[in-house]
Image 1 (cartoon, rainbow, N blue to C red):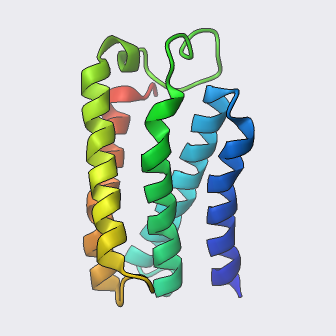
Image 2 (image 1 turned 90 degrees about the vertical axis):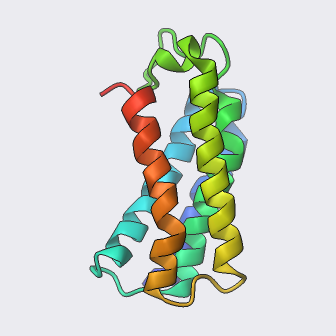
Length: 148
C-alpha cells in the first residue's frame, strides 16, 4: 500500500505543475520537488533501505522523465530576479551550457524510460543501471547552475 501511495504522490507532484503555469518559478520548484521525491525513492531502493519494487522504480523514472521534458520551459528571461529561487544567474549568463545540461537530463531520462519497459526495471540491478545516469545529470547541473 505504501508503495502505491508513493507512486501516486510522484504522479500528483508532477501533474500539479500544470496548474501554476503562469508562475515559472513555482512550476520549476514543483518539478524539482517531484525530482527530489523520485531521487529519494531511488536512493532508498539503491541503498536497500527500501525494498525494490518495479512499480515504484517505474514511477520514479516516469517522474524524472516528465520533469526532463518540461523543465527547460520554465526559465524565461527575468525569472531570476527578485524571487525566492535557488536558480543561479549562470543559467541566463550561459544559456548554451544550461541547455546542454538539460539535454543530458532528457537523454538519460528517455533512455531510462525505454530500458524500464512497461512494468518497470525487473530488478534492482536494472534499476540502478537506468537511474544512475539520471542522478549523475542532476548532480552535474546542480553543481553548475544552482546557488547553494
